[in-house]
Image 1 (cartoon, rainbow, N blue to C red):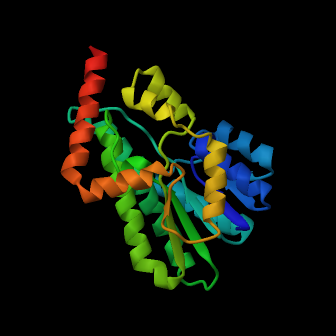
Image 2 (image 1 turned 45 degrees about the horizontal axis):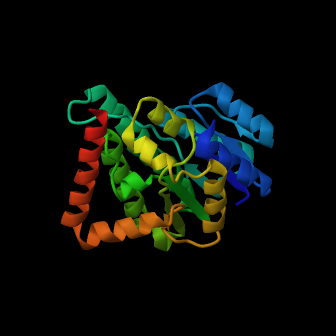
Image 3 (image 1 turned 135 degrees about the vertical axis):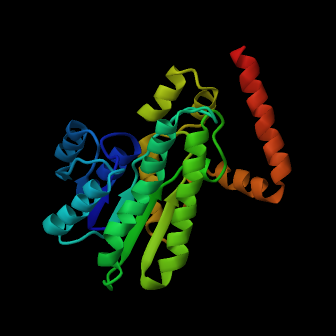
Length: 258
């Protein structure tokens, strides 16, 4: 992919993706809410920093317009921005709203900005949405994250089903634990799920390498952790048993807290 945009690329998976694509010869635009972080990554890879909030439609539109002005178009858009909020049914509405806008609406805004340009082109176009294994399974301790990541996966599926015949390749990246600031913050807060995910966590660079390999094909799901496919199969085949196992894990977490 010669012209690439990555959101949430100031650190973690996004930065690793930007570095990997640049190393492979792509022109890369680095987007992040933190202007300094975006500029630091862009400077490292010889890319272009375009700071902005992926959860803001105007910022997203400007990002796409800048890519067309500077690169002449976009071949690959990695919608990678995300936010993790611990919580349950009592979580304040503002936290639910932020999770919804970052984890779901950011993808809607990207598609609104891209599809009118992309669908009129005969050239290849590819959208990689960073979802999370939580979108296929769940994440104990975080209702906002689990719910919004399920919604993000549903939107990715809808885009794929609706536009595949028009040359749009949509892929959903669904990792479990990845050694990023997001996971570290969860461990620091004492999150039992974060501690559990840390045991099999991958480096962000490993995830980027797996994504680069996945771009050679068009499989919808990109699963850096192979076990996620089996967990997903078990969830579908015997949902009651799977939920029972999740509840057992929740009880174990609660016992540990006490």
